[in-house]
Length: 281
Ligand code: NAD
Image (cartoon, rainbow, N blue to C red; front, side, top):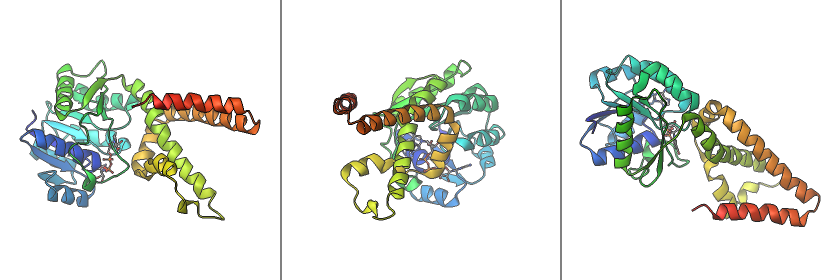
């Protein structure tokens, strides 16, 4: 499809994308990363062919497609560097977890060849050494075009993700941030806060010595990369804060039911949550 692609941010997601792409197409892959170590590892693992810490080196490589896979708050400055380093016809897309206003800011810099995207796949692990080529298979991929997006660029990115095996769905960028603010960013915030809570309660007894299966399941995502999540919370703060308020109300409701010894109320509260959870496959 695209003979020459560039990945900006050769970490877990960028590396996984490069592996999935290489498996399907005969191509050359150029990596850009601020960490020389990440580029070296990616080259050793044959994830990229060449790499550089300097975005300007894309002028020589002349990619047909650029995929951005860095923490989301780096996107605008990287886009400014890209604008000066790639040809007019080069499509730019991303794997970032926040869309909304960010997509429009990217369009202002890069024009209508920018196509926002978010793979609904991942883990708490960071770094190219964890990259895996089947990460995106049978997983949702949310495409977030705007009324300005070039239809051909959108179609190319959509086809690419379908070939990789993802289930592509289009969504308005702001709706995306509401949806994933609730079902992804809030749970991560709660998991981080729960670890802080257990740490706070560990003054007399080290509670981390007694992790049950539920605690481990629930808090796995609190081991996620702090920089990536700082950027997500900052960039989607409006939706995350709204979701956090609703969560605080739900927790306060349960607290109230327990405080007042409302057995029936507790049971109803739990029954409702349990049936909703069982409805997810
Ligand atoms: P990662 O830490 O594994 O990789 C990020 C890479 O970007 C690192 O190698 C880092 O050195 C590099 N980098 C940071 N700033 C840079 C800059 N200014 N220029 C060039 N390189 C830079 O993180 P990841 O998990 O691969 O996440 C990458 C993106 O994917 C993020 O935008 C994240 O929101 C999104 N995402 C992650 C997941 C997940 O589960 N990890 C899921 C969906 C989307």
